[in-house]
Image (cartoon, rainbow, N blue to C red):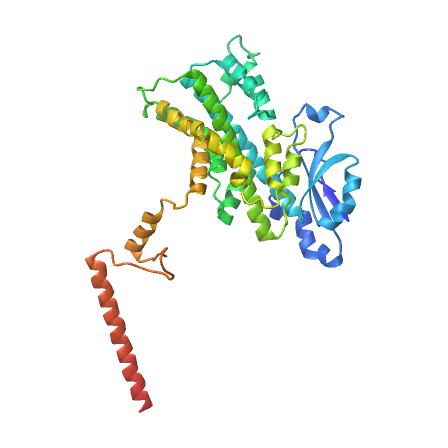
Length: 414
């Protein structure tokens, strides 16, 4: 058994690597497996910078490598760290870390959208944001590390000027790393829809277009005839919309990991990944994550949204969820993850998707064909008289070609 963690250059900073670049993964495939050597890679959980200094809270690692050998290794590792087995490959641990990072931004973005809606729609100020978020954090739906620190952020006054709060002086741009795009690329490659995670990523793309946005703001106008709202209802609806959006972000991230696990034969352990992500100091620590773990532990787990308890809660809260994008649009506020998550929910539950016209258009244009509900086979229709004439001409040409071929074959036999 060989275990690798950290970096060879002694740098303590956590380095994000794409799973195919894992040294351990490649060595395992190329040589170690055939020689009976079990290679593991430990991916350290990123934690709050204050928690890191506390000696009473252990570090946490996701570990990738053969399951049976991991059970031998586990007691030794547990003596100094919290560990979780991501799957039967070093690459799986890297992949889970990538998914974790995508989910983190999918969890953060709804709070940013909610804060902007509170500012514009209700005319609340930063102290109100902090009070509301503290109330949410003491409730049943959203208690979490992200919500706790968000409340603290909105209370913190600026220490460089006598005016306002720090958050109001921050430039509205979030830099992107190459690793931030990996989950979206993998989802596309695997054919897994992840609109919420993509929306969180695209919000950051828009954020770095600062100069373009400033110019466009003087040309493209926001709505002026806005509806009157009840502030208390808006606050309550926002809390519920955030909950539903975050659940959807997790559902999408888990779906990517499960799809990759099937392709790569990793036997990924979703509940172990979630448990480590919920370790003290993690960005994703929340009560909600406990409920998601409970759903994923069930023997018949297929998809997070159709878990009995999760689906019941989404059904209960969906009208609040639906009201928030509508309200945001009326006030001209971008809310990418609220919209995208709701689209995911409605698309996933849709027995018949509103996409049949698209398929008909492609058949009309290029005769690409379609399938039917009422009979087997593949069909292409003559949508106009011109199509019918074209089909007859082709049939006649094919018949003539066949007749000529038959004549030639007959002559050869003679």
